Image (cartoon, rainbow, N blue to C red; front, side):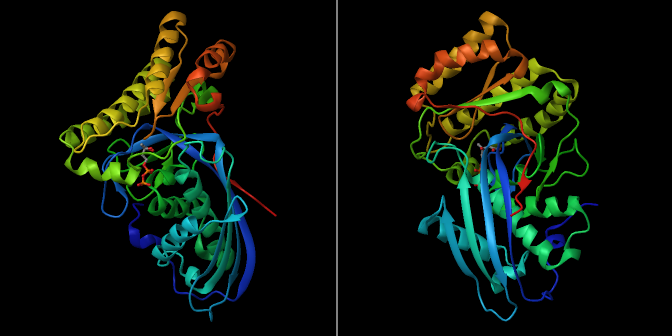
Length: 363
Ligand code: DP6
């Protein structure tokens, strides 16, 4: 069944007064084929496919008091156990923007606590993990208030992904284990721009996928992701890029399916460099890589050429480098990582790997 936006609207309120708490731990993700350019209300100009991470995650809990006679949202937000006005404002705006999907929001007192597993201001974008954790918590509240609101797990995660997308596009992919696909693609009949779905037809070689993150800089980006997406509207390579990404999704499906590690790495690196080339070709142009980013990319390519070990890089919209390798090569790769730690801010390399997706927290 192909779902439409209206399928996610909630039925009229008819829950009874209730209080409780819910919690989810949700990971970040790394796109292989990147989402870069959007239209309408947070819809992607091309499909993307990502690796769900394991260690880089956000833990969010919500204590809720729902009372149908309450008018308006009463919100308290704590980030890493402290009040955070800037985050609270953003979260309030987001919550009020999704009341059609979760009407209980406008009749509730919500106390939200959120914390990241990765170091504060490490330069890792936390929007994917935080918005997915929040969307899962909200879906859990709806399920508690009205147990018949979801017919099965699939509809629960589908709505969580839909709502996470409205907070941050890439967040909709974090809902699923291992690999996730977001965006309409001719290669997947039930794919949609509205939410992501799990991609599980992958070769077992990818079970051992490692993703170490070398933090080059933890400075705030000079151009935010949303500004970057907007600049794609006038990018001269726009349509070529969207066509390329669409056809790469089909190729990647096969690569993952057959376990073609070298083709996987070639696409991963090309996507990372293409993303940054698009930034450089924007008007106005901008550069998010730092000199140390380039040094790391070169070191990885040299190591690969010398050793024939499949180690690859990827980049998000920032200077930090994701280093992709496989468990079986770990001892040799560890030596290489030690040798490039000098390019990292305070020698920080965060170890991570492909992960099993979000986990519900029971208190
Ligand atoms: C380069 O999901 O952060 O990481 O939808 O505006 O929140 P918003 O953007 P965001 O963009 C992510 C861009 C990317 C590529 C990707 O994750 O696919």
